[in-house]
Length: 235
Ligand code: NAP
Image 1 (tube, helix red, strand yellow):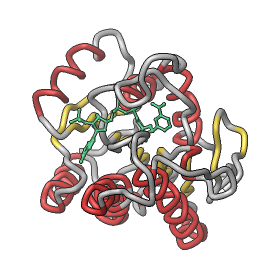
Image 2 (cartoon, protein in one colour):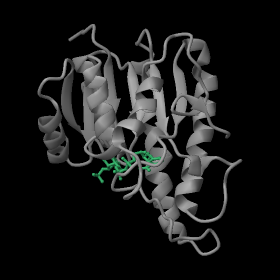
Image 3 (cartoon, protein in one colour):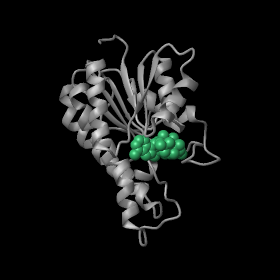
Image 4 (spheres, protein in one colour):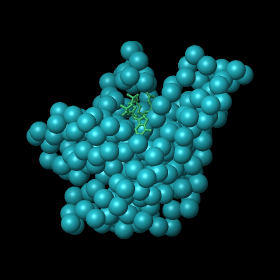
């Protein structure tokens, strides 16, 4: 099936910033694949969000650490839509504020990288053939100031290293895909009061706004950037 509405995929779309990003993209008329590790979580999120939105929200199963699931979803999107316009790599784990680099459990670090870095990397690669068929492909890697080398301090080792690596991946992909017009950017949502961010952060809408901005950039928009609220952050 071919559709004029942009086709977007949000990973970790069942709660937090991912859920709000999916809602906002559907609010702009996108057909949004709201993905979650557990299908019932995706279905629940869609049931709660869908009424009244101009775009469609489609629940789907996706654990970004599972290569078979990533490939299966890419096949489904190819069969149903033939292309993907927007990929939001939002899924992440383990804001490990209680840990230190000098003593971190490296299995925990590896597990964190498996989701926060390799999950995004695997998903981009699986969907790249479909992004290449889009007239306006955008990839948004949801990152964090914790991944800024310039601003980096001790603590939060697994998470900080995973987001620094995600930022590096953003630069690599952006450069390699620039000539094809695929814009790839990293976005920090700021401190947001989600399960990960905890109390005291801002509303999810503030976090999602910068992600949606990067997901809907004009063709003249930046690529290979790191932004918060549309403003550049130091790498
Ligand atoms: P959150 O509330 O903890 O939600 C994380 C989402 O990621 C959940 O939907 C979770 O699914 C999903 N997820 C985790 N592992 C996954 C996997 N292997 N496959 C697919 N989905 C997976 O976090 P959030 O605050 O909304 O964070 C969203 C993004 O913003 C993350 O990239 C985070 O690093 C970034 N960020 C957040 C803040 C903040 O203050 N909140 C600040 C800077 C950056 P389950 O429900 O199945 O666990």
